[in-house]
Every structure is written in structure tokens, then in C-alpha cells.
Image (cartoon, one colour):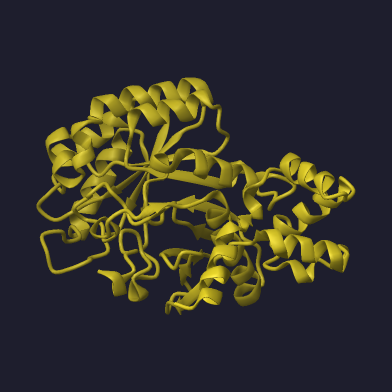
Length: 358
């Protein structure tokens, strides 16, 4: 490598990602270089509310100030590297990050809403046996701006391809959100902020495999968004087989944590539940789920399984799904069967895996 190339790389590395600065830090920087304090707010609005990707387009900032910003800062924006559209309208984005890692996010259109399904980590460390993402080793946590940018990209696609606004956000993409706690909450704060996207937290759902102490922390932090639990079995033996994390976060541990959550937030919980052939498709499992639902006000989303290979996990037969529905209904539990979306482009629940990296 030539000396000039080395110097250029060193210069790039020295530049700070400007979106890691809080508004107060940006104001302090502008004062330190002899600029007016209010310029910081103008730049901050370009970065977040308008999601600008480069300094040159900041039209109300002088050229000399823009040159100072370019010399000292970078905007590590994501890039939608690959774009796929399903026959049902679902859109999957393969998102390239500043360090060339890839995550996936999904736009899910229905007649009443457009939902962004976003990722929180590059890969995942939790080894759920039915999930494609688990086959990728966890590389790193996403930064708040990288999570935010996924939402912005889908918001733009909702407008461009459907002429409709983004209505809902679910943290159900790659990774476990509660293992990237601070960055996920910072991203949600920015998404909900008037200086950001101004989306109500009531339209945001965080889905977790179930980490009891972190569910309690959510409650203590008085978050305003919704909580979903990937349950899949209310019997420890079965759930541990499906999700090894259940060894340290048992069904009873989760029940106690959810009771604490509800006592603090008064917000009902959604249970995500897949019924697999020969694994949890019998009356015993259905009745265990109905009993678990009595711990706190809740509803159940029965999700169609999306195969990731020819292995042991297969969608249960329709009559077994009906068995569940009848038992849950008799117990007074609200249950919905969720139709799979984006299956033909591997964009459905459990299929996000950057197939080119497997």
C-alpha cells in the first residue's frame, strides 16, 4: 500500500460519525469552531428529521461550514444493497452497513397498515433451532442510527411503491433486541422524537425470545412501546429443545417477569407461537399455552412456520391449528392466525439469514 493511501485511510478513520453526537455535543462543537449555536440544530434536523446522507445538500448551511463538517465528520448511512419484492407485495432489503456487514429488513403491506420489520444485530447468538438467523454467528450490535436508517428506508419505500405512510414498526428482524438494549432504546427514542420520525411508541413492538431480567428492566425504564414474546411452548422441556435460552429463562421465570411488566406498564403482551408437526401440536401443549395466557392480559399470534431446510421442523396440519384455536377460545384467550408474508423471497418470520453468507 502506498503512503498516500495509508494517509487517506488514517484520515477517514479519524473522522467521527456525526450522528453519534447528541444535540448538546453538536452545539458545543459549533461554538468551539466559532460558529453560532443555532447552526447545530439546523444540522441536527438535516441528519435526523430529513435523514440527509451528505453534508453538501444542507442548503441552509454555508459552504465554509459544510467544508468544516466534511473535514471532521462522516455520516455512516446504510445502503440498501439488494432489494427483493415478493408476489404478495412484501419487500426485503439487504442493508449494507458502513463496515460492509449486511442485515435484512422487511416492509410488510396489508390492507390496513404498512409495517417495518427491522434488525437489531448482525447475526444472532441465541441458537434457536428453527430460525435461519441463528445459523449466522453474531458479529456485532447495530448502532442506533443503523436501526433508525432501516426504518427510514422502509418509510421511503412505503411512499414510493404504495403511496401510503409507514404505520407500524416491529423489532422482529435479525438479532435479539434485548441483547442490544441501550442502542435499541436509543433508536426508538429517536424514531419517536419530533426531531426524528415522530412515530408513536404505541405503534412499535419489540419482540424477544424472553430474557427475564431484561423484561423487568424494560418495565423499570417505563417504556411506552409494546412487548411480544416468542413463546412457542409453555412447557419447559419442549421450549428448551426449541430455544436453548429457556434453560436460564424458564417458563416460570418469564411468567414472573411478565407479571412485573404488566404491573408497571398496564400494557398487554403478545405471544408469538408456531405450531410444529409432532413437536407441540397436541392438546397438552395447547392447554399449557391457555394456562400461561392467564398470567397477564395477552393475545396469541399463531404464526405459519416458514421452512429453512428439509429438517425436523414442519408446519403442523390445519386440524392441529384448529385444535389450538378451540382450546384458546374456550379459555377466553384472543388468538389470531397470522398468514405468512414474503415466503418466496425468504422474508418471512425466521427466514432472515443473508443466504449468501451461510
